[in-house]
Amino acid sequence: MSGKLYVIGTGPGGAQQMTLETRNAIEHAEDFFGYGPYLDRLSLRPDQQRIASDNREELERARAALELAASGRKVCVVSGGDPGVFAMAAAVCEAIDAGPEAWRAIDLTILPGVTAMLAVAARVGAPLGHDFCAISLSDNLKPWDVITRRLRLMADAGMVIALYNPISKGRPWQLGEAFSLLREMLHGETPVIFGRAAGRPDERMLVMPLKDADAGKADMATCVIIGSPETRTIERLGQSSLVYTPRFISGDKM
Amino acid sequence: MSGKLYVIGTGPGGAQQMTLETRNAIEHAEDFFGYGPYLDRLSLRPDQQRIASDNREELERARAALELAASGRKVCVVSGGDPGVFAMAAAVCEAIDAGPEAWRAIDLTILPGVTAMLAVAARVGAPLGHDFCAISLSDNLKPWDVITRRLRLMADAGMVIALYNPISKGRPWQLGEAFSLLREMLHGETPVIFGRAAGRPDERMLVMPLKDADAGKADMATCVIIGSPETRTIERLGQSSLVYTPRFISGDKM
Image 1 (tube, rainbow over the protein chains, first blue to last red):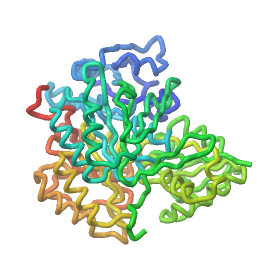
Image 2 (cartoon, rainbow over the protein chains, first blue to last red):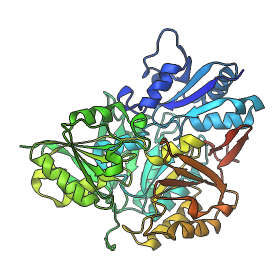
Image 3 (tube, rainbow over the protein chains, first blue to last red):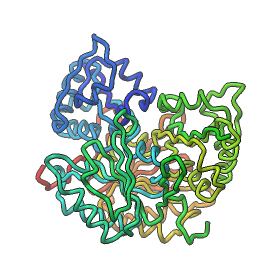
Image 4 (cartoon, rainbow over the protein chains, first blue to last red):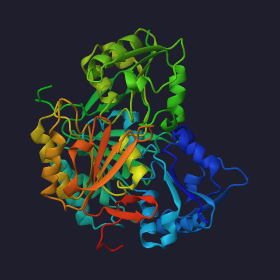
C-alpha cells in the first residue's frame, strides 16, 4: 500500500508566512520529519508524530520519510523557507532516484513557500527587483573553486547575488573570501544586506556598503544579499533606508 | 497625515498560495491597486475600493497608490507571485526615490509571497535545488544584448535559469533566440520546463529536452526553467516525471 508524502516549507518566519495550502497539508499529515527548530514552528496535535533530526542528515531523513510513506502513512517533510531552494525537495528526489522502485509510486506533493531571500528583500525594499541569482556558499556539497568561479561570473553579469548558507562553525572563512573577491569586481558602495531570521522575533536587518561588509555580521540564520551596479538606496527620515534594484537598466530606452 | 501602504503578492495560484500575513493585510486595507486579473484573485468587500490598471503602467500605478496613502488612506498594491520579483515593490521604490519628500514618510510594508519559479519548481520536483538565477526576458526595460550576455554567463556558470516574461505579443522572437543561444552551450538533453499558471485551474506543466524546446509552448503566464548540466529526470510509472537538481555537484567530495 502506498501512502502520501508532502514536502513543505514553513517560510522563514513561521505561521504568519505559511501559505494556506501548506497549513492544510500540515492538518492532514500524520508523521513529520525535519530539523528540530523547523518542526517547532508547527503546532502539531498530540496524535501527530514528530521525528526531529540534525540539519546535516538530509538524505537519511528523506529516506526514512519515503519508507514510512511507502508503508501507507501520510508523511510530511518540513523545510524552513521554501522546500525547493537548498532544502529537502532535492534530497527527497535524490533518495527516490537512488531508491527502490516502490518509492516512485508514492503520491508526492511538494508545496512552495516563501524562501529567505524573498522575505529579506521585502523587509528592506526591493533589492531583487531585477535579475538575480541564489548561490549556496557551502562547500560541503561542491568544491570552493566552483563557488568562486560562479561568484565572479555573477558579478560580471551584473546580477544581484543572494547567498544562502553564508557561514557556520565548520565554514568560518568562506563569506569573508567571497566579499574580498566581489570587492575586486564591484564598487565599494554596492549595498550589502545581512538579513537574519526575517519575520521572526529575533529578526535583524543590516545594510552596509560592500567596502565595509563584515562576515562577522552573518550567522547560520542569515541570508546575505549583494546588490548589482544598479542597486540604489533611499534614505528616509525616521525610518530605515530602502534598498532596491530598478526594473530597468540605466541608459536604456526606458 | 500619512497613511499606510502595503505591497503584497497573491502567489501564482490565488488564495491557497497566499500567506496568512498577506491575507491579514488585505483585510486591513481600503484601496487596492493592481493589474485586473491579480485583483480578481482577492475577495474584496463592498467597502474596499478596486483600482485596476493595465499591466504595463506600473510606475504610474505606484505613484497613484503613494499619493492616496500620503493622503491618509490604507492602500494596498497587488502583484501576482512575490511583489519583489519583477513586480510592484521595485516600481514603488522607484516612485518614492523620484517623488516628493512626503512619500518617504509613508508607513510602507512589503510582504513576500510565493514567486512563480518556486511554484513551478514544486510542481515538477526540485529543479531549483542548487544554484540558480532569475532573469526577465523582457527587452522593454533593458537592451537585448544585456540579456544575451547574461544568459551566456549563467550557462557558463552552470546555473539553473528561470526566465520570467518569456514571451508576449510585442516580444514574439526573444524566447526562441534564447533557446538557440543556450543550445550552443548546454547539452541537448538538458530539461526545460514550461510552467504555466502554476496552482490555477488552467495550470499546464510541460517538460522537454532543450534540443526540442519550442518557444510556442510559452505564453505570458509561463515561467520557463532551464536545467543546469547537473539537472536530472526521474521517470515514474503512472505519474509525471520528476525533474531535480541535486544538492551536490557530481565528482565532488560528497
